[in-house]
Length: 403
Image (cartoon, rainbow, N blue to C red; front, side):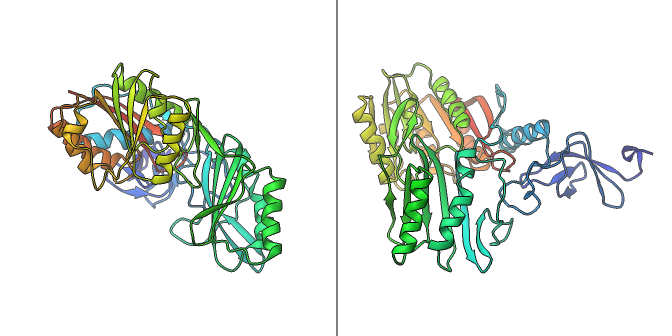
């Protein structure tokens, strides 16, 4: 008798926010995906959407939660995380756009953790719910250019690292790999030479160290930049960058389409200018950012390339733009951190702005802010789920509100 006909067997209908499979009765089952069956004795019988994980570290590494889900199940998860968030606030979605999923080996930034042990240096991601570091031998998520640095970096740290753990931020810039290490104190000539040899032999774009006083470049043959819509922008060490290039392009395309022919745009939480520099050359843009080094990088790029992007250094959590300031713009773009933009959204709601492109990395905080906009007369005209963090429960979205 097949499992689906066994008395008491339950099908997995969806994947919950933290990655468990969920049945109609609300039962949460680790590693369940839609189409799996939970047998009466509690065993999970694999269905058509349950696949073998592509990475040997999946059962231990905390970097991915959904490698056992096929493309259809993964797409369903990303889509439902966003649509359920809207439904939780009784928000009507007028048009749900196709879900964007980044492909394997597309992550252009990642942070690894390292520790020197009696057996050598372990370097990788932490185990889920633990400080234990998984010494990775493969990673189907990161760009090959970055993963290829793991073995030589492990060798360099064997000479340079002390007994304290280190964090290694890897970013793919225009000039190549940018490596920023925190927690590493170079004591003496040999550790310093080991790290310089690593940077030189791997042809790094930059090697930065934070020894307790902020990131300082130890190796940088030429100024490091990242191109945003064709505009090279200086890349401060460990500055925020969209995790994948294809994901960035999807977000940018939506933001540009959502603001339409608006002649003036306020780009809030602007970062390096991901959206500001994507606007048409004739559009007047105000890019507002709180991080000083990031703000200065976008300001210099705008001036250097003659773009109509005015840059404002301002903490929008402490001092959100007020209605009289917002009323100068035909449209607003905002891409806040995971906490959302509660206070800033309230000011937008109180303004005369009629068009808001809201990009979010947290469907829950977005839904809360969306409710504020809808209560002020906005409609959610378009919504797109985005899965840049492949095989992860981290979900993003783009949205357009109009009134």
